[in-house]
Image (cartoon, rainbow, N blue to C red):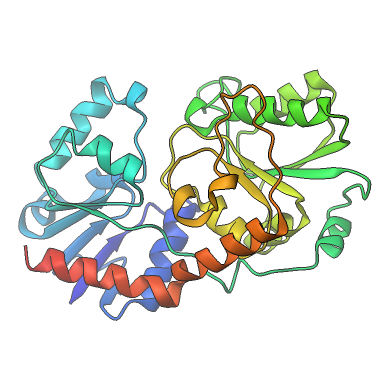
Length: 310
């Protein structure tokens, strides 16, 4: 089977994910040849880049990573309904997304989580990684590597990513008397950095590190905190698990597929603080192995086999 995998070319997760699929699928995958049996729109927001004729004459699979109900209004909703006329099947990575879009489409929805590239997200020595990024030895290093601020003004929090929850959580750790240093990377971290400055909590920020350095930054963390309200993955859950990085997360995306229940927390509780045990970290590590490329891409191949038969 020939699959045209459309990627946004935004130097983001979808580009890397599409490239990994092309290298590991048993199907013939191209990012340029529209003369295929199936078109996979991996970045749903880029669907209008596909020629109208191809949308009409080829089977279309569209991935919806996540939707934010509060933002699913006006043009965003209209765009979904217009695209739905061309889509033959949807792919979603988690139940949260499946439940939401099932309200707006009658097309088949295939739920299949993301994979993890174990060649990138490897276990490294924590002391060496802390030293590389000049992090203090006497502090609890808490990590957050996803953008948290809306692009319109670089100060309004992107609430679906939970930057307010992340900051609240870090402030609660500090109130217990723990010396905390926050490690940040990624675009649009202005909201979190402003909050940390206001609270007097030290942090280090690396805006666009290489993917190799991001892997080392995970290993430098004593704790990674996901405070999101809506997610497809997030990727950080798989990446933390694969690098043996202690992580706690709200119940979003794939958290329940990989993390032990102790590490899936509610940040609305009065005292949600929980630090993963060594057993928790090993459990997550063993769980994420099921999502390694060599184990998981074949499931995507079967997904496209099913779509071809629709």
